[in-house]
Image (cartoon, rainbow, N blue to C red; front, side, top):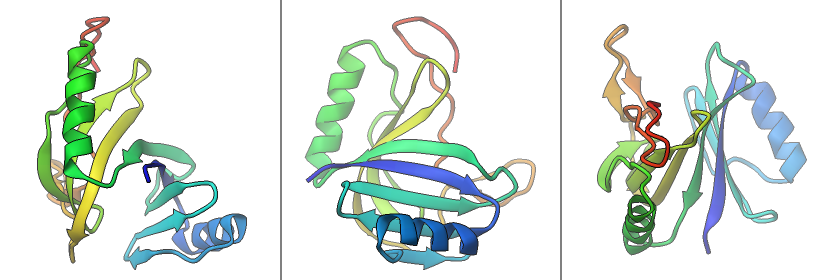
Length: 151
């Protein structure tokens, strides 16, 4: 079963976990410092919360699949239509190991198409040049081939 992913930035992780736990009648599947995720059965949703000063904003959207082959097929389909992707990568991000690809919509919303392959003890991601801290779920901007607009 595939499901949509919604990743939100929140200013108060505890309050957000309480709110979304009540809203979807479920407990978080994973909790780490500054991070929580829910695996909601109905509606099928992966809800990811990142604590930080940009609360109330969208972090990214995604589609979680069951196999790496589905990620590869989605990347080929997207690239075949002229959309520029990040390619398929094995990575560690969001306290998980993944196979993923990314694409950005015309308004700059980032979409991750991925399969979780395991758990990780670290947030993962590349280091932010300004702070040196790991930045997860932040691929380099991509260009949309259909419009040629830089994102």
